[in-house]
Picture 1: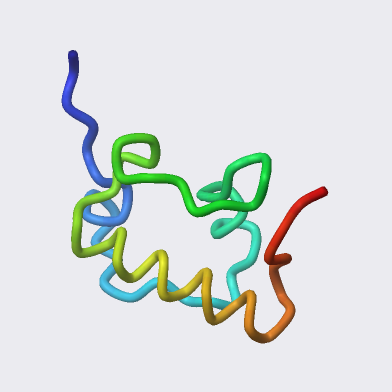
Picture 2: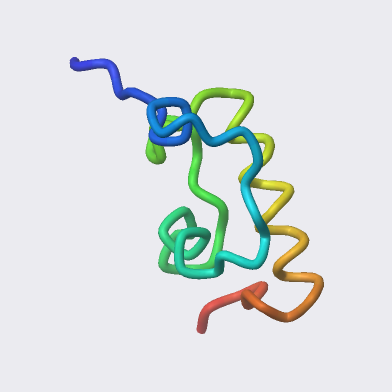
Amino acid sequence: MKNKICVYCSKGIKEIDYKQVDSLKRHLSFFGKIETRRRTGACAFHQRRLAQAIKRARHLALLPFVNK
């Protein structure tokens, strides 16, 4: 199996902004759950930042907690 390269590392992005809802939506499943590192291809550092940004966006009602 081919190793995935972290998208954020390859672009040189250190911080993931919670206001960029379109990019955060790509890391949510159909049911609204945060996708795993295996599915997203993010490194551990960026996966933690990604989860934190998604949770902040949910708290401010920019993203839904659950998709029905």
